[in-house]
Length: 349
Image (tube, rainbow, N blue to C red):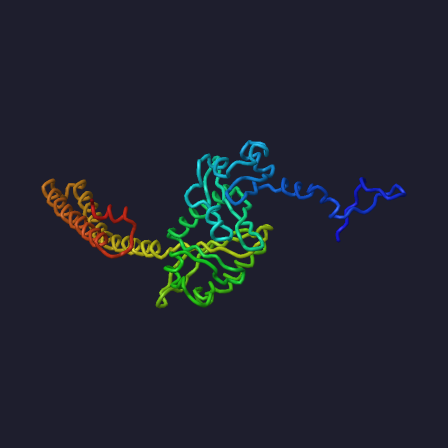
């Protein structure tokens, strides 16, 4: 048996003697101290719900002394009602003879009310232990986690949680779409299964660096998807810290760059085509106007002749403008993935 030394129990020689735990049970004092030391409000009821005893936490919560609680029904002091509330766990426990609980909002806080039945030797219900556990902080944390989970799940970026060796433990819908990995696979996939050949070493080094330094890393890469389709992506890797603040895994936030890269290539192609359509005709127009200006200044060209040349060059410029308009329309109506603002501009809407 564990021993506790107390100055109240002295040996004949004046030295402290041993005090056994059983000695502290005199008058139920130890039981009462334990009862009052419990932070959750707890009270004991008889078979009809009458309060027989209440700990200090119950008195503090209800702002009522124990003598004023004893003899009252639980529903009167907790809920302020004249009878048991619907789906009362006490009523359920009296019939099921097992622990019953439910969650309720009262006193501007969320509580889980748990009822543990007290049975006699014959298994008859003789009362219960009524426990109120304040779960407000837990509920708020759960709500926050639910909101964050909804944000992650609906994100267009792939969000993946993995162990330090790359084994995937969670992923959102976008991750499944970008990587082609099923969220219902029997065997746990590994992030390296979607990394293109030759790029695995860079990913391994990045993960080791994140785990070792605790600092995130971002880089661009190419991932394999369904049917060997490849996606150009921006990858962010960050540590997932455990309760000690030590890395327990890594998270990947992957942004699909493929649409942007396609748009960039489409716009580069457009700019090259536009330049080709304008370069030679505009150089020709510029040369003709320059030659006309020289002849006109030297008196070798009349104003009427100059006017005729200008009308011809204007027709050339009008044709160039029409060619660009045709090109703009073709690009705007194409299936190329270009930014909507550019498509709007090119279509002259």
